[in-house]
Image (cartoon, rainbow, N blue to C red; front, side, top):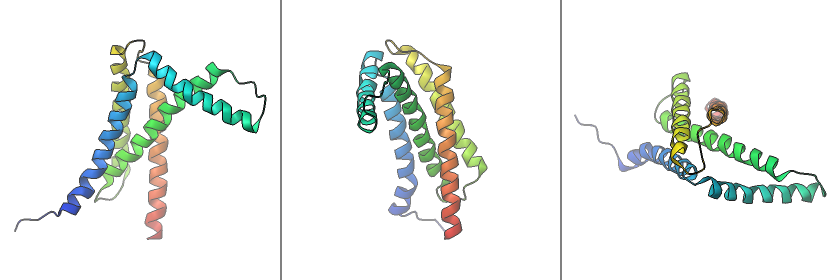
Length: 158
C-alpha cells in the first residue's frame, strides 16, 4: 500500500527549509557587498543607535567607529542566531528534538559561517576573519539553546 502525502504535509516539511535557504541567501547577499557599501549600511544603523542612546542620555560621548564595530559584530551574531533557530526548526519537523539534531544544526551554521568568510576573499575590500566565524558560531549556539529551552517548555505544557 502506497503512502500518500498531502500537499499540506509537503508544505509543512518544505517551508522550514525554504526559510533556511532564504536566510542563507540573505547572509550571502550581505557578504557580497563591497566593503564601502557594507560599511555605509552599517553606519546608517550606527547613527540610529547613537540617536537613540542620545535620547536617553543626552550628550553621551560615543565614538562612531566603536559603535559601528559593535553594530557590525552584533549583526554577525544575530544573523547566525536566527539561522540556527531556522535550521533546528527545519530539522525537527516530524520527529523528537534531540542533541543529534542540535549538533547537526550547529555544524551546518559553523560550516556556512566558514564558507561565508572564504566567500569574502572574492569581495572587494573584504576578507575572511576567523574571529567572525567564532562570533557567528556563538550566535548559532545561543540560538540553539534558546530554541531547545522554548521547545522543552512548550512540550512540557502540552
